[in-house]
Image (tube, rainbow, N blue to C red):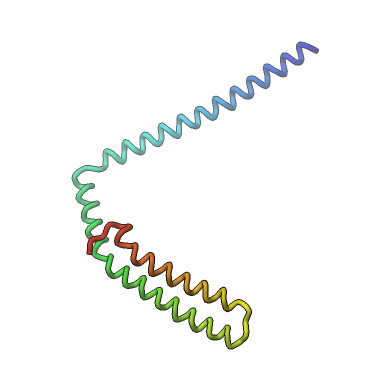
Length: 126
């Protein structure tokens, strides 16, 4: 009986050790793959990479004012559609008019806040 218990304990120890080793191998392989990818990314960046990123940054900054105006226009459309929706709900006597008002006002405020914060968030200077 004692020999069987010792065998079971040894078997459990082997299983636990194997699981731990398997996890460690997977972790090591993941770290090696990540390090290899970082090395490749570092090798590919140079003066051409910096010039490309700078060019992309200036190109994106040119679209800033147009995107901001588009976001203001979307806020206006949300306000108009919401106003018509609220009007029709009030005429039909629906019970969720307050909810519709809060959703419409919240959507408009969110879009205006996002459009206002856009230059700060992306660091645009226009």
